[in-house]
Image 1: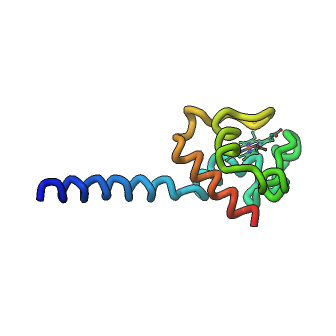
Image 2: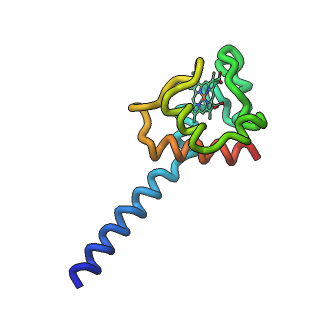
Image 3: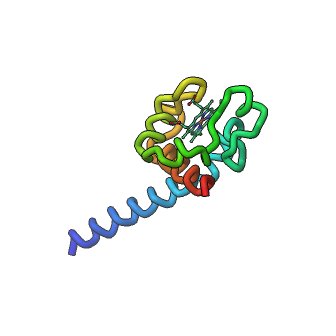
Length: 103
Ligand code: HEC
């Protein structure tokens, strides 16, 4: 009985965590759209100036999630590192959102 309660509490915490990490669109709009544009095509002045990539670019479409997560975490050329600024779950959610923009 006690064990079931514990399991239920763990499940609730897990579900709450997923719900938070689900805010990929909000994170993207707040932290990424400035350079990458609301549509992910990097057509903003900052995106053009820094030569940000379009998320429809075949290289990005083909890249593994882990590679994109690493680029966001550690930065890449003029792309700023988000390590410490966003949690790993938030970075993962933002990359998940990028995938929806590539379609
Ligand atoms: C200050 C502008 C700027 C911001 C803000 C920014 N990026 Fe970028 N991003 C870039 C630039 C420039 C590149 C191109 C880097 C390169 O390959 O030279 C890039 C590249 C990328 C790539 C492709 C990496 C690869 O492997 O080719 C991904 C994915 C990415 N950004 C995701 C994000 C996410 C997610 C956020 C928000 C959390 C974000 N970016 C915020 C400028 C920015």
